[in-house]
Image (spheres, rainbow, N blue to C red):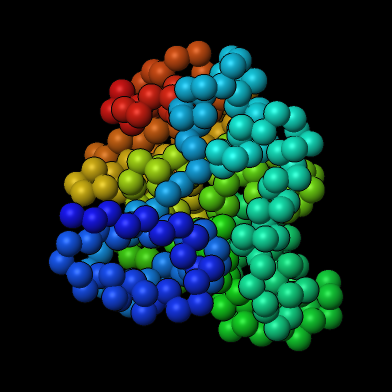
Length: 327
């Protein structure tokens, strides 16, 4: 039996014919890696469907990062949300080296393919990096381009650019799910970066809001653990002024599912007042099913269940314990 390992296969111009030739041999197992945007997962799935398995390699999780970080978890957290979990970057000695590596990776690995209008792609990536966890869609982005840059870029072109960034494993799209109606909502949706270091490098380490960063890290952790993740939407009717009925939309940050397991998760960096806590758990109280509801924050000493049966835990316990959702 022969084991053939091919690294950075996208550097080979005719890699499809090469892989087809190797795959036809009975005594060969072929292992292929690729990180360049030209080596797209959809292309591979089309060419080799049913003849192989795809393994999506994520950056280091926070737990993996802390397994060799020489410091406490609080300092490790600050390092992780700043520079991310790409091993090459993690192993660099200085902040300056980490920043240089991240910027080089963005340009040389993720964005080196020639695009007809690289300026528009660059601007799109800046917008997405500045608005992680915010609801948007190609039409909204088109209007942003028009108002800021007087650009005539179309929504369909922006959709193609977003798909390119997704296929490059730079961002992931998260759809909204109507919890009461039990159906997906077409638009808008959210986008999260697969690595916080790449996101921060793109915007030159500005706009590093801790709340949005924590939300992005929680999303990545759920994906690493193998969950499908959606954003939850709950429509309610309440009486407003003069008892006039008003429709409102409440949001659950994440609905994560794997087989028969399902969890509702809210991310809230600080629960510093009773009002803030009530605001965060309010969507949970409008959900009429028995699946576990979890509120993740940064200032809870240890996990506990409140009177409504909601599990409240700090982000460190969530990230460092692979069974944290089962507490």
